[in-house]
Length: 132
Image 1 (tube, rainbow, N blue to C red):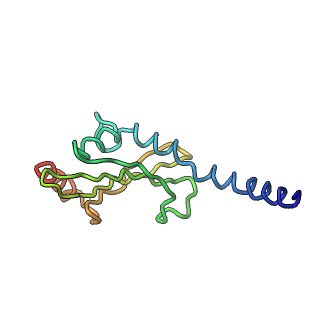
Image 2: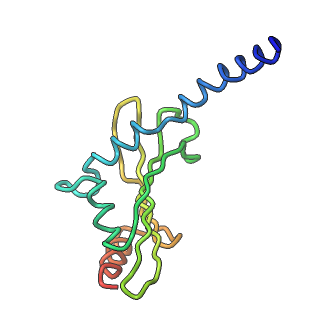
Image 3: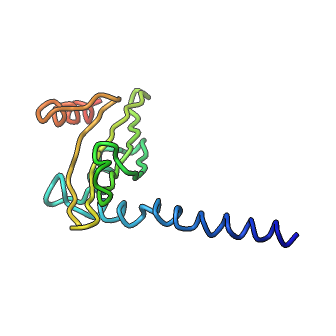
């Protein structure tokens, strides 16, 4: 019994640092409160505006593969499920990065229904989506 308890204690102690490394709550909150895309609107306000009355938004974070060589960079994404008046589902992702070392936040990419958007097509598609 003591041996089993000791193994369990070692397993829990070993998992604690891993759980601490994957806690991205501070990163998510920093990105939500930043004004990265629009100067007079927080990223969270923008995400909620794009969500509309019928949709929902979920904020998630992880280490982006693109920046695997820099352990200070965390990717934060607002995953927005927008329901149109006709009942259709549209999926929007606002992708950001946060550098933990220098506290900088940058807008990385806009993805609509799985398709990355360009500088001109992205805002235009968002505008058209508001009309749906």
